[in-house]
Image (cartoon, rainbow, N blue to C red; front, top):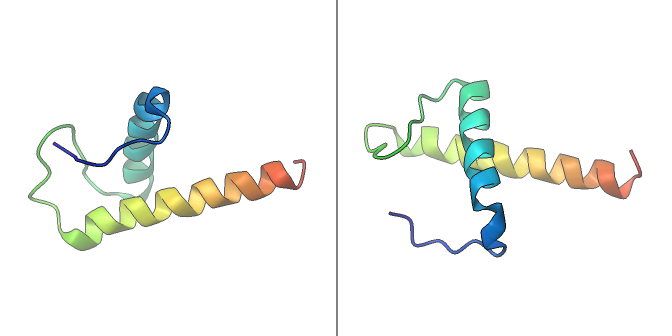
Length: 65
């Protein structure tokens, strides 16, 4: 169980869905529950790509697109 706290608790379900979407896009076999069989590089790539996509979305929003 993660000890990370979501700044906006209402966004938890959307963030989880986004995480699985990103994992699928980059070919990481992420599943609900235990993922100890994945390498730290695989897990890190999911988080890193999530951040990249969120930054791109915010930049588009700030640019009015």
